[in-house]
Image 1 (cartoon, rainbow, N blue to C red):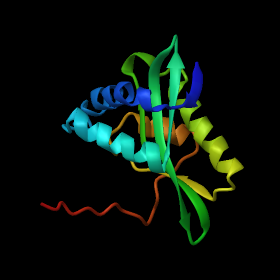
Image 2 (spheres, helix red, strand yellow):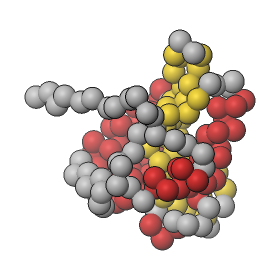
Image 3 (cartoon, helix red, strand yellow):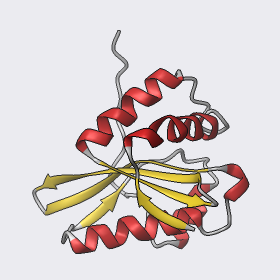
Image 4 (cartoon, helix red, strand yellow):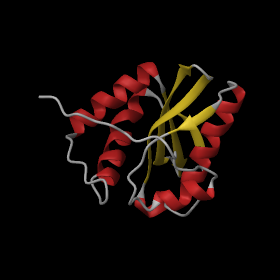
Length: 144
């Protein structure tokens, strides 16, 4: 497996992978491929997108950004997706390890992300040393 920075021509393949994986339970996302590509284009310009490849095929992706908090710089992971056929083969671990190495080199203070509480990935993240925040909840208001 090889991890590399995504290039513009990868975005459609990445978008299809993300759409396919996030439309499954528990996420049940129903956004169009155009909405996914719009988000990817935004992060391609303002954040970081890295892919995991096996046999020249993109089998995983991580999308993240760095923000400046009071405590110092922090990494926020926006999306992590692994093709179902390649789960439990070290792809997600490789992508998370890459982000952690990046954050350490940039002297970031922490890495944060949100995920669905019923996601199978919660066990994976806990195994990697991540813990749910005790005093934080995500608040959201839909706007028309």
